[in-house]
Image (cartoon, rainbow, N blue to C red; front, side, top):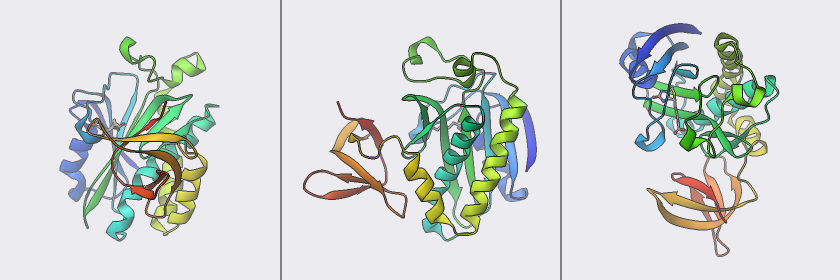
Length: 234
Ligand code: BTN
C-alpha cells in the first residue's frame, strides 16, 4: 500500500477518483476529517477527527460481474480488524458492519468499469458518535473504554484488506461469499427491504447467492435483492 495522508478533504472517495487513473493500484487516500463524507445512496457520512476515513484505489481487472462483491472485501477486512481488538462484529448486507446491532463502519465501493474501483471505508475509532445516533452507532473507543492509536488500526485494516483482496484477485469469490455468509447479521431473520424509504419486499433472508445478491423468501417465492436497505422486521 502507498498512503496519501490528508488533513482535510471533501471526501476521500472523490479525491481518490480524481487521481485514480494516474496512480498505481494500492494507493490509499486517508484523511483526518472529511467535510462532505458520503455514504451509500448519496447519504451524508459524518466524519470528524478521530475516525478512520480512507479510500483504497484498486485495479482488479476482473470481469464486471464480480465488482459488486468488492464491498464484501472491505466489510470482511473491517470485521477481521475489529476481531483483533476483541470486538465481535457482523456484516449487515450489503455494506454495513455492526456490533450488537449498532453501526461501527460502512463501506462505499464505486468503480469506473475497466479502469479502477474505489473502496471507501469509514470506521468509527475515537470519534464521538453524535447524541442523536447513539442508539444506532458506536465507536471502537467506546467499546474498548479507551482511545486507540489510529495508525495501529489502519495497519491492521490494510493487512486484512491485503488478504481479502488477494482472494478476490485470484478469483476465490466463493471463499469471500462463504465468509460473508457466516458473518452475516441478517441471514435467517425476518426482514423488510426498503428502497428510497418504501417497503418493497417482506420475507425471511435465506441466503446470499454467488453474485452477492440477498435471497429473500416471501413465502411465495424467493426473490433476489441487489439494491435496497435491509431492516429487521418487527
Ligand atoms: C455507508 O455506510 O453508506 C458507507 C459509508 C462510507 C464512508 C466512507 S469514509 C471514507 C470514504 N469517503 C467517503 O466519502 N465515504 C467513505
